[in-house]
Image (cartoon, rainbow, N blue to C red; front, side, top):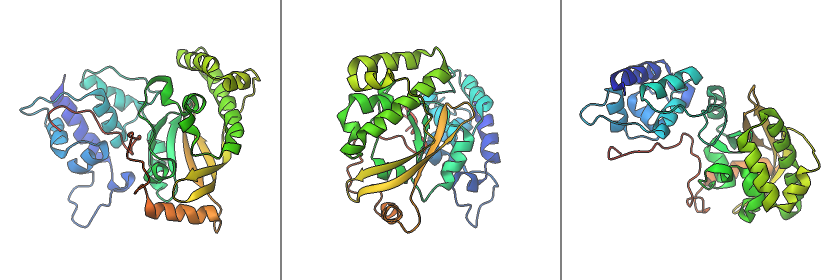
Length: 301
């Protein structure tokens, strides 16, 4: 593990990021144009001391960053695909797939847009509806997502296998969402080709859910780009919102944001949501995907 070069690489990436690009107030006494070490640490969910050790090349403790730590740093520093892979190579860690999966590298452009959507619920998901990152309002609107791995990381999978996944949607809307999810999954499966992940998910869902099997056999295909949703919020009741999607060039990731027409009841409820946040709403159970996932740690944290 080339810790000195890893530290030097992190320093150069930190220096090039302007605070405003990641939602950090520059403040009147800033002496450097880039981010401070403690700001990178906060964005990546690390302790400032641990990140400082990384930049210094390991110091006395010779830190061993995990793949989750490296992924969090790549997101915090807005690394592109080549830079992210270089970071993993310097740390002598296996380079994770960049295209999909709950640990996928979120495209920097989507992270930049997410930073600017501070007054509306927004999240970045994969084409299998695995949440990669979300803002505070999305967490307040939907509650915490279970920290699953494998097929259960997909909300589509949970929709057809776990009744609790449907609790935030009115019962009469369930058939509509089921049709939309399956048609969107058909499009994703065709786009990916003979992808083992999709093939396994579809096979399991056809076995476990007669509803899914029936819908899958209709062969309906439609990429979900826009939808009207009613969300059942525990404190605010039913919130009617429009959901929009911005797809990446390869279709493997999408940015979702939820809004309502100005002056509508939905817009008023979103304003209230920004005030009450997640307090007393029971969203502190299973950990949800955070703005930048917290990294694994050893004794350094």
